[in-house]
Image (cartoon, rainbow, N blue to C red; front, side):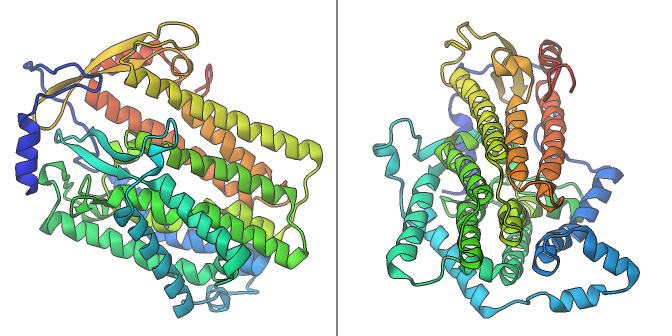
Length: 479
């Protein structure tokens, strides 16, 4: 069925609000919803700066470990003093190899097969897990896409095969990822730019849903932030869901295991800091896949269009910069004191509790239409209305109870606590592993601002009522 027919069929259905109530129409004008239609000079400058510098930033943080024991300052000092040049650093770095290309091609192809060809069965025997075919959120054009949720199953199959290889088959070394790390960086860049460029061209020539495309008139912004909302190939291959979760996040825990194997190979032991990083980040990854259906309602799927920001970012930025702590610990095997290790573990677990509990409260509130108990009380909320691009009026509720009454994005606060725990597991010898908490702080604060700007455009005066009821974003009494 063509996208136009699908769109029309969707419109003919009774339009339901997110809380299940039938929509009604009024004469109120619709606010802007989704990514910007116009680009100011500041945003354009930031986009061009990121396009020009982000690939080199990733290379820098990986290179300093390979050549400078993860010292961030030493190469800068040597460049300033003339001891080295950019060319000498570049020539010393491992280059593209066909071995790495084969590894990465097999990896991505395997994840595509798991995503497309192995329907989820884990939801049939795992209580509480929402897998299989699930509905996404309503798009700005009023569509509701369906998704095959099988990320947890893909993660389990992948790691079972990794374990079987390490223990029994010995097809490849458990250190294979670390041993080819910089050559793999070039391979991921090739895929990241290829998929971003394909999505850019596709949006002009054969978009999946033309009414969910946004053209700003600026080629740089369109390329980076994306034009299509949900680019797909066929019925089920959704670019956003696949690239957000599969090549990078499934690999995240395998990368950490490869780091641990390399530490064992080099020093004859695995440090407690490496174990902490593996455990805490594995909790986050498993939480992501356990709640993959919930992820369909987050900003990445609900608001971001698919461009370089998501395509290249998920292929390159995520696997290489989110795993800096494990990489650092291969070159600097830190053994933490019992008190330090316990403090890191506590910080990570408390952060995860805040993150998960906050999101659980929102999910419970949504699924019960507010007919539930939050912290032993009936939840309070702000009733909101918004229009989709097809002119339909919809209703939503913004909760002001529980963690959501403390701050508007306390789930981000928990996320930042966990991020700090990953970094603190590396000790305080270098700033290199702390790039992650700096980046996550910038990312989540910026995401707060982006999300709230969109909500303000979407909900109008109702959003003002909500911010008056819950005045703080991340830190009660501060911000």
